[in-house]
Length: 582
Image (tube, rainbow, N blue to C red):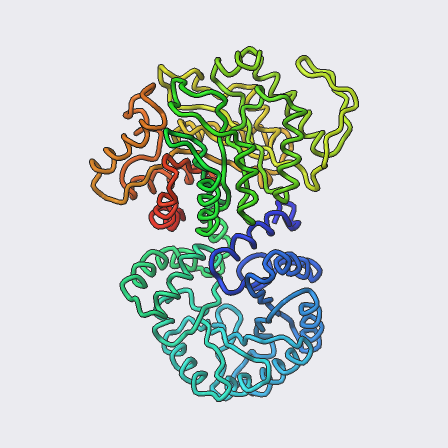
């Protein structure tokens, strides 16, 4: 949702797409965790349509059905079926309140919904404290005996009742499925009879919950308990008293996304397109949100010892090998590129990649690169601002006439036009000072203005949590002064990571020293890298990332220092599961 309570359709599409890629069998829409209860009927149908469009063929879409009386439920059920739902989760209604509950009341209600929708139904036993009801054994038998009722979500939050319900359902001739809805005992529910789960908590650490389910079913108990011990503390925080606050708590956890840089550096062995494609495909399989490429026209600088492939060409290549991953540059050195030529390149990439590209830009720092393209470093800020103006207009499909200090255009149009606005993130800000750095450790006023006019900000990899926090405070103030909705702005941070799977700190640092020096040369000492980059043991690296998240970083972009996909696997195992609030 946006801050004005409207649906952020683009973010919803990305989120549904991401969830569908986490290994889940289905997505529950318009249920209790999230904004579903606070949407108008037409908004709920729109949310359902969007999720169905994004996930069709990859995950089933289970729509929540919440009504006050039977005829209303019939109409909602029919509308929901037309909007693309694959199944319905049938919420309890007010008529269930009061004891004893006549078993025919819930049975007739489910029967009416099944007839109106023609969809499979999941009954819902929900603890009374959350507005639900604990069904009697007779009521469960009648509901489960209705044609079309295929499962029950058991969410009594009572282990004894869960076991009794699971045993009863397992004994029925129709063999319905028992789905765990008890967020307070994740693993235990599988061991006590649940065949699957339909959890509000599933919106977080989805892949790890899929792995927990698999480990439990395969009776790999050491792995299952390891995952349980990782997930349950977070779940307990989300659903701590007062339980009604769990929706708000969920929104405070985690990140908008984690992206990875392609290994576009080319060492002695060069770099092949298949290496990049394999890296991107593995990132997509592991659930990363995006892949990025950096821009270094020249090499053998004071900071980088190896050449780098062109970022736009590299991203275009991997776009053909992926379907979900967003693509980004961090950062494209904008003043070294002619804006009309760049607009054509971006328009082509967006057309071929279904507009997955985020244009991350910066002003650059290497004097040699400016000289190589016939420019002066002192012009970089002005050229960057003019290029941004020209690019936005050209990519929107406008014929552009422009009279600037550096660029002059007369009725220039570049196609194809983008269907949606360009996503532009700008880099800059403070960093930890070092005598070799060509940049001052400040947030320059011109840079702040440029960031506040962008869709996102990329904090420097050489910046620590404290200066990032200072930068963010200034950026938020600038956004507010401009009347910008902060919900439409992304605070990102890129950093370098070479993970060594050991808690032996000396061993980890020795291997990291080798990896960093191979790519970055010796222009700065490794002791500086230790301060600003993600070095140390896996637990130390997680703490460094959490420190950045704690001060407002919403999106992480991780640089690899080796082309092997083994680093991606290590990150997915040792880092991603821990990037949640404690």
